[in-house]
Image 1 (cartoon, rainbow, N blue to C red):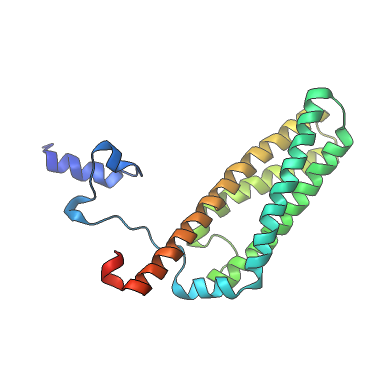
Image 2 (image 1 turned 45 degrees about the vertical axis):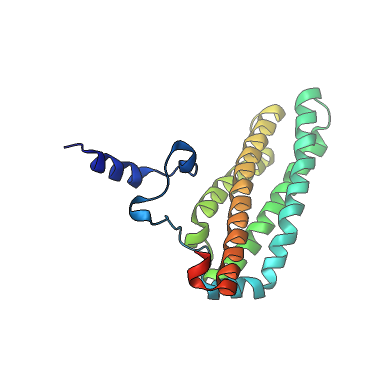
Length: 198
């Protein structure tokens, strides 16, 4: 029988809306707030902070984004005007090499922090989507190297790779934000005590 309690339990089980309070919801049943598992254990956070690969990732990520923006402009210029194919192609190759570099160093970082090369639970979906990004960039290199398709089709493949990259970059930015918020809340809990910050 669909009583309000049964319906509410079902909704609570599938509700993942972060704006529940704006729709009249005040919290989880029983007054307990839903808590996501921490991104880092205290030991992982310590390893992350001590790893030189954290700095490498912190430098490579914005560098890769700058290379992406420049390359995107060159690819769009070629598609709009038909001029600058060589430089647009070179820029996508450079972007792909930077991507490979950040993926290798990221795997080393993940190994140092989480004890596995890829697909650590905290970054599982980011790593899964990174595989799509790598596949699309590698496919671009393959079609250029083998001369498959005409230049505009190759550039459209580059744009598909770039679209996947933007989604993946957004995943990592959101994860970085969550880690900062988590780090801040753990510092508050240590400062004021476990019962007061919760």
